[in-house]
Image (cartoon, rainbow, N blue to C red; front, side, top):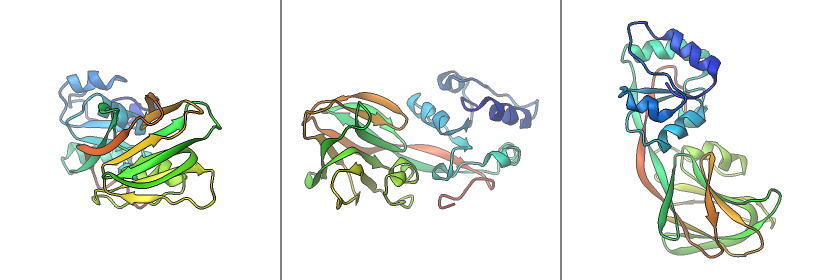
Length: 240
């Protein structure tokens, strides 16, 4: 187990039989170094922390929302029982790689976003898909979301929910300056760029700031790699 709400972590720990070897720590690297067969991750940030730590074993998300088909907090004890009985399956979810100026800088399970570093400021962004120009617009930000991430920030910004396994991303302008601005469902790779130098812009990958992005510097977002998520009967449906 790694990270998450202390109360939820305690419930999970208490549900595990005393004879079962386990490691509990806020540091995902410490948990992975214990060579577990599966990791229970309480909350979305625990999942993204494992991805940044280079997780290569299955993750059971708990209390992390339907986008991850996670186990609701109310079903924690039942989920642990199913896990210990080996009544679980796995499914791969795609990861995004983000490269700035040709250098890979981050991986993301949910989304990659360009946004001004100062709140309530706008910039101008361009979008290309597989080398073809898509559009250019002024907005608070632009987010590229995997199907997993399409249930999160991209949806809050007005984007579509994208079915799992479709191998496409949704690209959504956030609070665009014009009335009629599209959002898109695209096959990658997708390249974003900042087209004006009025305000500083940064790249976000999932829940963290990665680096600044200079005007006209290409930011390529592409599918690269997967993470294995565990599912039990208590797990939520993606469309719940």
